[in-house]
Image (tube, rainbow, N blue to C red):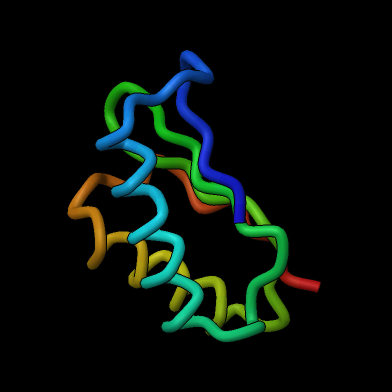
Length: 80
């Protein structure tokens, strides 16, 4: 999973939080979503990646929302 910030720089607190988020989402999803990217925008998050099912795509969105409480601006996870 890749976590991106708009300025491509992050302080230590952000990196620790990002690691916790990655662990949480991977635990919830297992291998159902590949190449998951969380893109931090000014007002929320954008999700990208590839999922095996629409259900997995929805699970990813809920796992991220549960972990961050940030608005999901777009769920661009592709179902293949």
